[in-house]
Image (cartoon, rainbow, N blue to C red; front, side, top):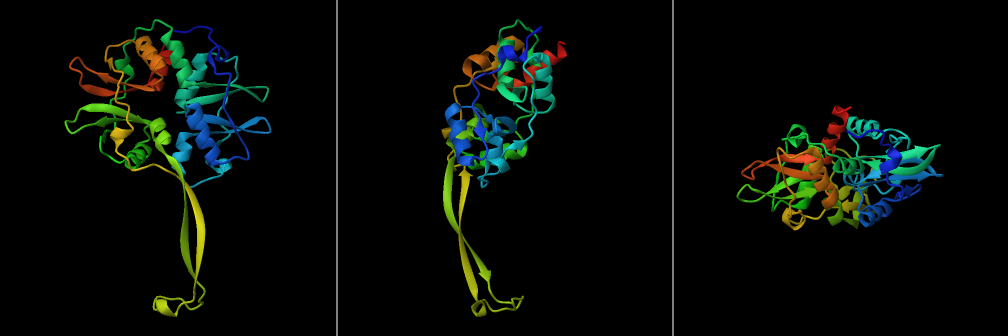
Length: 284
């Protein structure tokens, strides 16, 4: 297990961030360009929130960053041991924490940063003990907007994709969903009656109505087949693979999860990068 490794030793110092006041469209572009899942939000140089892909997908019609972001996020100091950081990330079910010293943003530490550290160690513990066998599969031809809704309801960041033969042939993550999404502007209409005697028996033709047109802007996930978006070149691992071995595969391939298979290559479940944080916590 890692000893005397501080947050400052592994944190990302070149941090992409959003500022208030800001808009959803700016964040949408930022997440795509930086290829990150979330960024801190600053106001007057201080961290006041954090905004992620999940925030955008959960509130597709909200345009104001202040209403989209998660307020008062958990932060950590740069001199804290990474075992403490791992425990905070795992227990609070979050992927990243802004690193703040003297009220100033100095970096960000994520699950991926800690997993990258695990890759450089020689931890032989079998990953099977950290595997969550419960997965919500989707079909290769399922519309992506349905997949996105399924992931939201299941609170899943990634889902396996199965074909007609019931074989796992790919994976879709929230990163894939947001990369395929677009900002759509539309005009909608609402009819409001001017009459004061509207009731159950009011004739429609006798009402004085006023039509109100208003613009709506939302994050739209297209209804394209899941197979057009999924990652099909899967990096797999065996149930008895070691923690550091799997962490290295995640680091090299820049992925958050690995399908775990048995000796016959049958799918057993998805190993999430955050599951590997338990190896640090259990070893200290």
